[in-house]
Length: 82
Length: 196
Image (cartoon, rainbow over all chains, first blue to last red; front, side):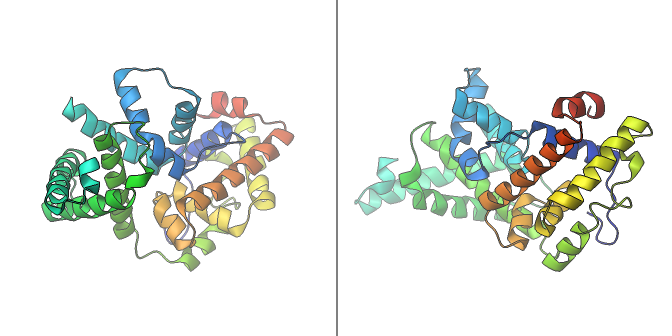
């Protein structure tokens, strides 16, 4: 982030619009995401079908870079342990 | 997991030691090799993670393996610390001040999505929506996050929890989406026409 004069790049504006387009009236927050992320990661790794609660976690991940970063790290650990 | 609650101190200590070893092994896989993470950091993260796991034991619902849950708690703790260190010099005043520029052409130029009448119309409507619908905190949070600032740090500067911060952004996105839709720009149009 430029501390002097912010100017959004085309990629940033596209990402912003993508987030707006993906917005739902009801979304889970980061706390709920972290609560379910272990189950979500295990099911994704084994190819199990996601129920409604876990589908909402997947949606949250599409909008939250921090939770995605933590999910990818957990996935890496689970993959290494297989 | 039961051993972590054992009244037998020796059994509990053994369980903590075993879990600590599992956590640091996972942290080495997940964070090893990062330039901002040393072996000493990994040990600190494992220790902090272990304490947080013990503190949250009653919240484990058995929906995943216990070790998977413990790793997720530890990663959450470790990433929060890494993000805090990386952005500790940014002030709230600077964040709010920059957010005030979000609806300006200098920050969001007409050609931000490329040259073209449709693109300019979307950007113009977005600027109007930002100016009319969002609070200064929402503008600041959006600009900071788009600029790469970790959300934990945005929330910390705004003196709010991550959950409340997420709601702040969610409310902002909903308001912008509604405003754009009222201007004839639907979410599906944005996705197909302007995102890759």
